[in-house]
Amino acid sequence: MRSLTKILDPIKVVGSKIPEVLFKGIATNSKNVNKGDLFIAIKGEKYDGHNYIKEAINYGAVAIITNQRDIFKCSVPQIKVLNTRKALSIIACEYYGNPSKHLTVIGITGTNGKTTTASIIKSILEQADIKVAQFGTLGLVADGIDHQETLTTPDALLLQKIFADLLKANFSHVVMEVSSHALDQSRVDDIDFDLAVFTNITPEHLDYHKSFNSYCLTKLKLFKMLKNDAISIINISDPFGKKILSMLKSSIIPFSNDKSNAIHFKSLNVSLNGISGVINADNSNYKIKSNLIGKFNSENILAAVGVSSALGLNQNFIETGIAKCTIIPGRMEVHHLKNQIKAIIDYAHTPDSYNKVMKTLKKLQHSDGGDLYVVFGAGGDRDKEKRPKMAKIVEKYAKHIYITPDNPRFEKQSDINNQIISGFKSNKFSIYKNRKEGLETALKKAQQNDIIAILGKGRENYQDILGQKI
Image 1 (tube, one colour):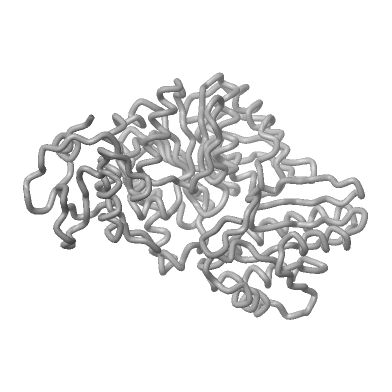
Image 2 (spheres, one colour):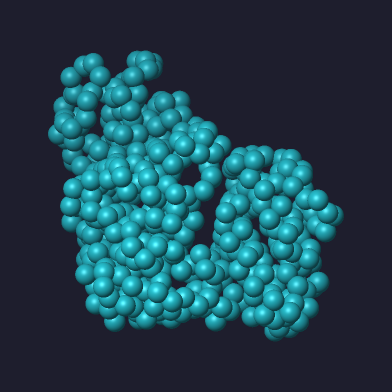
C-alpha cells in the first residue's frame, strides 16, 4: 500500500488538504480499476476520464484525482490539480521509484528515421555486450520480455512501468522513440534522458498541433528538458536542427550529410546492395557497410554513430553493429519474390518520406529496368492536406497506383480517397475498398524485375476502423 499524502507531495494541489489515504495501484481507465486503486481522470481527444469517475468508484477506487472542474459529490476523496496529465507523470514516476534515473536513456525525436536510428543504436550496443531495450512504433523489443504493442511513446503510467520492469530485469540502457504527442501530453516529463537525438522535421500531425511552428516547438521540448550533463545529437543538415543548436544548454554532437564540421561521411556509396563508405567522427574514421537502402538511411547511421561516440563505444562495436542491423520491420523492407519481383514495405506516411522512398526506388528501378507500382492510402483523422501531396509524389514515379484503405479510423474512406486523387493529374490509378485486394491485383500485374512499393502501414497487421483494430 502507498500513501496518497506522500506520493502527492511534489504536486501542487488545488484547494483542500490531501487526505490520508492508502492505495494499491494507479489507473487512468475506469475499466482497469481494481479495489484499492487511485483513479486519475485524464481528458483525451475522444474520451474524458472525468465522465467515468462513478464507474471507477464502483470498481473500487479509493481516491480520485481530477482537474479543477467541480464534479458530483464523491463517496471517496477527490483531489484537484492544475493538470492531471502532468500529475500522472509525477505520480507514476514516484510510484515506480523513478526507474529511468538508474538507466541510460536515449530519446530519439523527429518526423522520420526514429525507428531506424533506434534499431541501429540497439544493434551497436548489443555488440558491446550491453543489455539494451528498444521501444517505439515496433513496440517493446527487449530480450526475455514479452513483446508489447504500444503507441510510439506510451502514456506516463505504462512508460514508468516498462522502465521499472526493465530495471528489474537488469537492463542498463533504453533506446526510445519520443513522439510529439508524448511531449505535448507530458508523457515523458519525468523521464531522465541521458542523450537525445534530433533526426529531422517536416510537417506532420498538423491536425493536432495546428501549425508547423507549434509542431517544431513541441519537438524542441525534449532538448529543453535535458539535465545539464546530458548530450544532444543533432542533425544540422535540417534547418530546424541548426536552430536547436543555439537554444541548448546541454553538450552537443552535430551530424550532417553535407558538412565536414560535424560527424559526416567522407565517402558514401548508396546502391541496391546497401550503404557503404567512411564516417569521420571526433577524428576517428569508421568503415561503414550496411544493408539498409536509401541515402536517407545514411543520416540515421550518422545519428547512431553520434550516440555511440557520446557513449565512448569501441570502433569495432560501432562498425559491426551497423553491419549486423540488416532488416528493420516495415522500413524499406525488401522481399525478393519467386517471380523475380521485388516487394518493398515501408512505413512512409508523410510527403517528405514519400519523396525519399520514391527517389530511392526509382534508382533501383533504373538498375534493373523494371516498372514501379505503388500500393498506398492515407490515415483517417490525420493531416488531410498531405493526402494530395503524397499522391502527386507517387504519380511522378509510378507506372500504376493502387489506392487502398490505411486506417480510416472515424473518417469516410470515400472522403479520404477523393482527397488523395485530387493530387493526380493522370488517371493511372485504381481504387480498392480492401487493401488485400489492391495488393493482390498489383502482385498479379507486376512482371520480372518490377518493384511493388507497399507504403504507409509498415508491419501493421490490422485496419483501424471506427475504433476497432480489424
